[in-house]
Length: 102
Image (tube, rainbow, N blue to C red; front, side, top):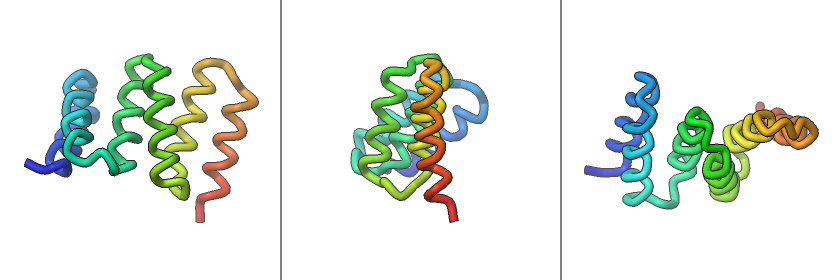
């Protein structure tokens, strides 16, 4: 099976609020395709929902590094900073995301 299969599986688990299963599916997808920024963004969102903010930020950073023109990574980072109450940094990240929107 390919990474798309595991990404879709992770998306379904996320929608069903089965975050541990989603995390495993995204991790398997990343083993198969470590260069796909979407996978880091999806896993980062699961980590954030689980309250695991440090690995969430790492994944959002990786997503931004791989695809700096996508707003989702900046939004993810903004949400992490918001959870940490780093409001100035959150505003900066959300501003970067807005600047990328068409």
